[in-house]
Image 1 (cartoon, helix red, strand yellow):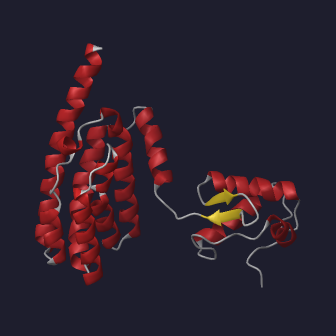
Image 2 (cartoon, rainbow, N blue to C red):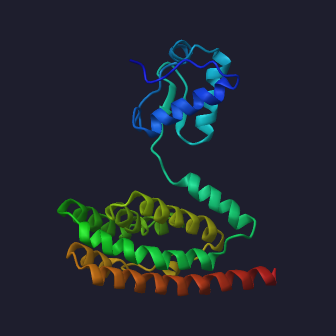
Length: 241
């Protein structure tokens, strides 16, 4: 039994795209899987090549698949990231509907609770992953890659929380923060000095929920102070130009 149904509606490409989207989001096709070929989709949906191509373009634009060329090419399901949510919020920043202080405030409200949940859930395997991520913070690259490396712990904690919606929010906030602050081009050790995550990681590994929450709050409070100073320097520099 096929998971797709023939399309007879006028807006056939939209219907085809929706069925493909549902199949991906429903887990019928997982990250890295190749969708049926163009010819197979034409037969399965009983539509024209143009309809199939328009449908594939629509789900590609939605970030669900990537198109690879060549003999082994086709439409492959992408690993779902949170860039789409972040892109929508970036538009709000551009329109002046969101501000950097609001973004920082949201992190202060959400990430301490995420750290608490991560401490509650932490397994030996996750503890090793946290320690490994923390050890890589010593690696030095050009800005902003080093800052991204020092943010990896936050991504891991979001995954460890065990709530996919909170994970999506945290990762989106981190992406937004990167996008909004990259123009400041601050020295890495000025915006995110080395060694700030150690006390958080220790608390999470020890399953100490209260301490994990408190240390994350303190960390973000310190980070936000640094960020405000860097933003002020940037604005002063812009005014002097």
